[in-house]
Image (cartoon, rainbow, N blue to C red; front, top):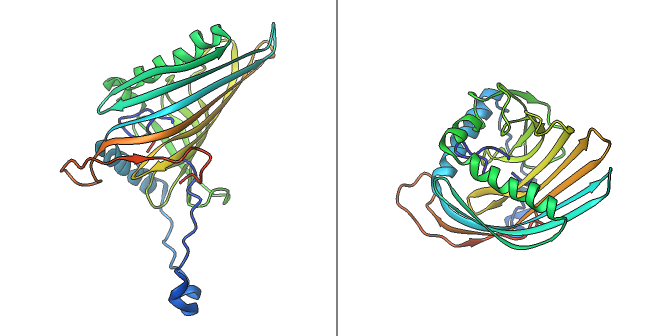
Length: 270
């Protein structure tokens, strides 16, 4: 899911980037302190986040990638396991197509969970759903939190609280990159419990920067069930290719072809 006003949601990996000075610039330059920018307020961070998300969503016209889904259930009445690999293609403004490449394990998980996730992702692209689930001030309240320094590059940490209960919204914390003002990471739970049988779901979501765009990298969701079971869903997003885009803040389309590294590479919702 692209994090943008026209995307829902979840749904950008940690920019763990160190700026290294060229060796031939000399010791004086290397020792020169980099002036720090004054921290922004919560409202300023959110304003920049929305503005940059809109620009990225407008610029990104078409891309593709591969997902690997895995779910492990441990509990009553029996343990279950399933895997599915899917190729995804996106076309602006609101079309996603999925091709199942392979599947194995529990057919119940594949048909009732994995394929339902794909249907929900398509549903989230509907115009009305995009407006109701946008990460903005109409749908969320934001509070700036202290940054514990866990993620380099993700300077701002915001608590997010949904204003309404919606299955596409979430509550928790987001990490915002201070250069691109994109989501680096999300730690959250759904605003609306997806099922009576689920007591709680914890969502851990990171993003990867591909060219100018921030796209999902890894998702790990752990659900505790009322009967005592535990379900762990992991999704890996790989092999991104930007098929059509134009440069940010430019109106003339400019075809590009960019291929991402896999999610095991250093991770710089979109």
